[in-house]
Length: 132
Image 1 (cartoon, rainbow, N blue to C red):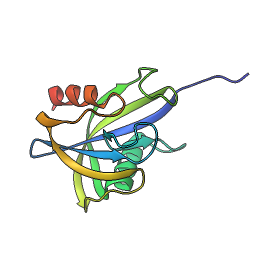
Image 2 (spheres, helix red, strand yellow; image 1 turned 180 degrees about the vertical axis):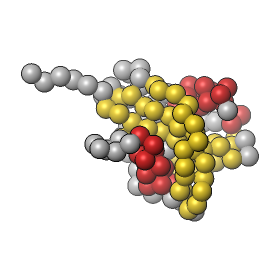
Image 3 (cartoon, rainbow, N blue to C red; image 1 turned 90 degrees about the vertical axis):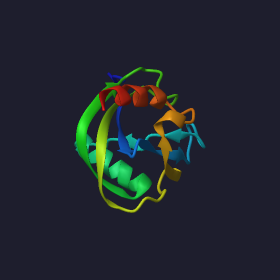
Image 4 (cartoon, helix red, strand yellow; image 1 turned 180 degrees about the horizontal axis):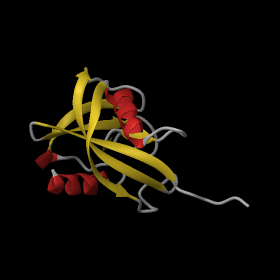
């Protein structure tokens, strides 16, 4: 018997001078929309390692995890399938900002002037702003 189960994802929040790092999505879904950097956790990978890997792949920045922001599990948050995302606050510890992998652009936005974001990332950032 085959059981359906959600896919595990991670997203990183990087704050710098009251700005937040976002990436412009290169692929479906939400191609061309801004989002938090992140992606799928590989089998056998810790979520903390996955978020640092995904952020590096998409932004060129080396990071370390500071805090857990929350877990987001609405079955409708991703149009492809049910995903559960673990959100981490990250600190930059190296690298140079550049877009790569699934990102066509990467830049910092003022928290007070965010574009409409992909997935449920506007809600995630609002929650993170209250916690940070």
